[in-house]
Length: 156
Image 1 (spheres, one colour):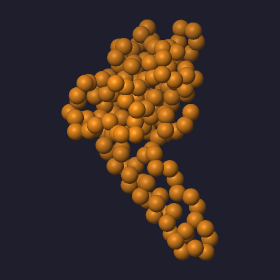
Image 2 (image 1 turned 90 degrees about the vertical axis):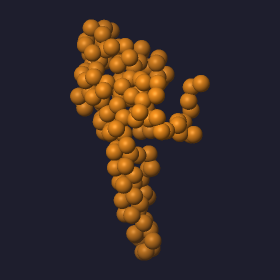
Image 3 (image 1 turned 180 degrees about the vertical axis):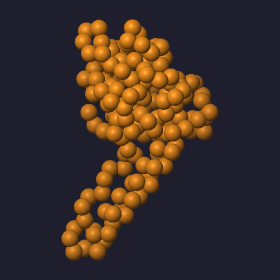
């Protein structure tokens, strides 16, 4: 799974668990059910839920009667925590190594890396104001000023 898929899949899975009221092992949602909601392969969901569990956002139980459930209320799970849980960062890539002997190549990668850090910090600050509960709300205040990004496919 690409790095760019982890965050959206994680946010979707957490929102689904909140929507279904999965707050205990008895209410756990199996990876196949989560995968059908995303939609993606259950293996992708299991990889993402493993990261979310490691971060303490959810708990999981393996096996035929297994699944995932939330350890926190959706109002308490911010999207920056989700991004950190799946080892995500702003999707700007990383600068290539510069060519030795070229003054631009020796300088620019470091500066581009600093710019990526600044963008990642800004993204984290913006995401810290949005919760999983906001994703389930039709028009939450935290997202009211924004339209979906033009490059993102949006269900009609």
